[in-house]
Image 1 (cartoon, chains in turn cyan, green):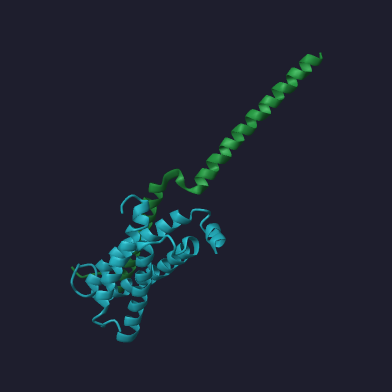
Image 2 (cartoon, rainbow over the protein chains, first blue to last red):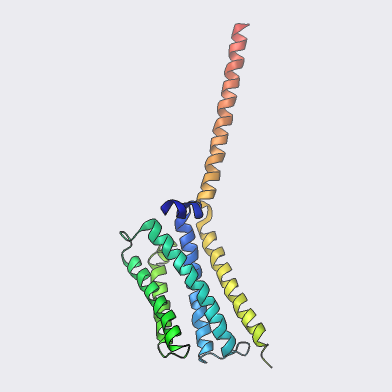
Length: 140
Length: 71
């Protein structure tokens, strides 16, 4: 597994992980804006609630794929041993993602839990990024 | 002013997402600079080539000296 990840990233495992994690966090901030438009909290003239919801879902799907890729690279290459707070936040991110997908499937898009799970998910993404990629970039 | 059609709004929102991803990639990649392993490998290769060329020149000089000594 380690060899495969190293081959796929051309030996730049940490760098690729940092880039992907940063893309995820940047898109997560955009997701907050789209969700605010979707729930009518923000009302820009150029974007209505329906298209914002559609874009929020599409962007969320992309984030889900990227998050799973980063998690696989992280656990497959570095393992859990030296993860510390980062490993805990990472596991919580995946749990929150699963919970959000479940909430959409069971309660539909009008589920009252969705905004809270979304905010928690954003906070967990930020915490996971700060304890690894942010630290690596000198931000965390 | 009427808002653009829904298709245009969706396409615009997705384009913004792509632009955000592209900017994030560009900023982080620029931050890494020449620490990427591909760049380091290229640098090592250049150093090796320079050393090889120096050794070759030394060998040629040695051969020329030996030939001169034989004469």
